[in-house]
Amino acid sequence: MGIAAAVVICLSCSTHTAKKAADTGPVRVPSESPSSADSREASRSIADRAVSWYSLDDDATFAEVSGPEDAPEKDFDSWAVTSRIAGFVVLPRDADGDPGRVWVALNRLGLVGLSIGDAGLDFDDPQGGEFFREGTVGGLYSWKGSPAALIYRNLMFEPDAKPASRFIVLDDTTGNFLPKALPYEALLPKDGTWETMYLELGDGSASLAEARSSANGRSRYRCFGFSLETDVVNEMPVDLFQMMAASLPVSRAVPALRYFLESVETDHASAGSGRGEQAKTDSDAVEFDFRNDDRGTRCRYLRGNAVALSSGDASFRRVPVVLESGRYAALADGKILWRNSSSLGSVIDTGTAGTASSGVVPLPALPQGFVWIDLALPGSGYAVASWEEEDWPDVGRSGLCVVSLP
Image (cartoon, rainbow, N blue to C red):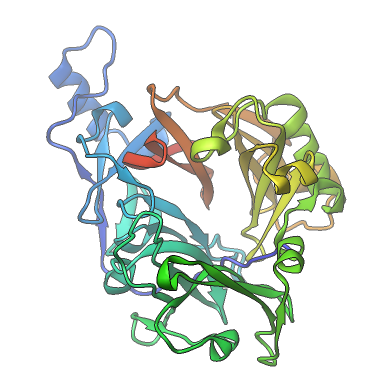
């Protein structure tokens, strides 16, 4: 099953508000001088602004800017080694119905929590930098109610690096990330050449892992299915692993989700979000990367020719989809499309997100060379989308965009 959880906890961390970049231009307002426009924009609350932009700095802080093109210039480097936004992890709603905390994974930098304040986004200090600096973010997970991450070395972009991977878990007592051994690792040779390339954590016995050794210029792979509950491990052939790790067909989704995915594909998914081939407009299939933030689970659904995709004869475009506070939302075609799950007759009814049952929120057009990457709903009627500057496989500037939802 292609299910992976992405749950995080909220810790007591020191918090800072994103700094205003000193070398960025003001938000232009017709008939006002630049200095007047900048002062007026800075004094407005986030609720009064249609959109807010933030750029990521190499010190794991965010600066508020007037747009991606005004973010400080940054040298391009491969996505595996550069600092960039690697994804969101979201805490499910608590017992009182309060929205979960949103965290942002920063490749090579750490994990940063965010919340919506009156002046804009507030960011926690980054955590886990000593581990995140060691390699590439390979995935974000739930581990018994705590956020966890796979950090590995991508030898394609770091040919001189020594193979190494770590599964790290945030300890809610100390606030530090700690390495955690996984059951299948006991079956790997202790010769220093093996690292985990792919990890999918699911309920019961549904967890999957793929490890690779690149000793002597030759790559070898071993694949495992294992249980987090019993520590039982079963090694499996690569073809069986690939079948189990593949995306599910859209027809396997629950009715409310299936209806939403089909409507997104039919009306809006001519262009995806993501890196390289995933953002193409002429792809043969759509992969919906669905994150259920109400329950802390994750699954991928595919509409298209799975056989052609697995053989390399076709490509897909990626569309991020989330469910939070009873609202489905998707990022496609430079728009956020949303619909309340209750309006779809869903058995999942965790609350209402507004008086309207559905809508489309156009995002500002990105400059040439920039792409949308991912989406999160931090509650309070806002959406956060990540963006980056791309010359695939290299990435330059990256950051966040905040828009209000009806």
